[in-house]
Length: 271
Image 1: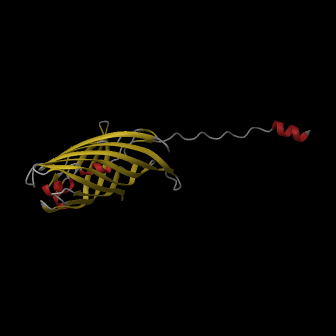
Image 2: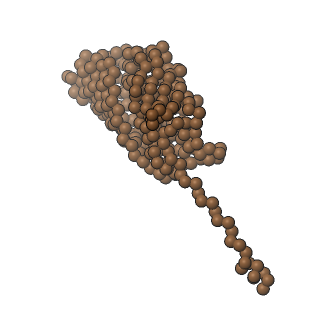
Image 3: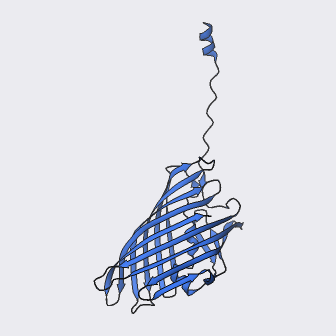
């Protein structure tokens, strides 16, 4: 009887503490206010027409220092290149190289919480840099789309990113529908690092008015896959790698439509 009475009167176990709420994934002022990234981007474009066959290769790599600040309710980013080199080879226009000496100044960006950068000012960029990278906003590759909402393993979101670029002799617009899910959370090191897996359906349309005998237009579509690591506590991107293939056509007056393929590889890493 004594044992039965003792069991019946034992206090209930302490309740389990509630699980912490999932973190909000958004771009914000990172710990320390400064981040340095190394980045690389390469693309190889090939045509496979009966009358026209050629390959174009372009690539660049660099090191960028980003300084963040809150200003008038906006997250602002000043970005300066510390290293840069790039090249493009084209059987029609030859080979072009660019270096850090071709970049004078820094970028001033306003960055939304969901990762859309708005360029307020750009450095002076030589024609060689523009020929290699194809845009004045080359550092937008450092910012990935985030939901600006609480997210945990299994969470998904969709972003549509539209960009347009005008460089000497080239006009190009891109629409990217980015589907992202939180694939994994790792807290083994005491920091929560999320793996973000993205599939991007990309459409590119462009026109070229210089460097060839006749103006040309191109249209490409395809899928680019990206795996990224995001540090929740530090509020910053740690690394991503993206790759994919786009296919479409190049149309040149007098030659008709020529099949076109573009293979893309891009990588960003905190340093």
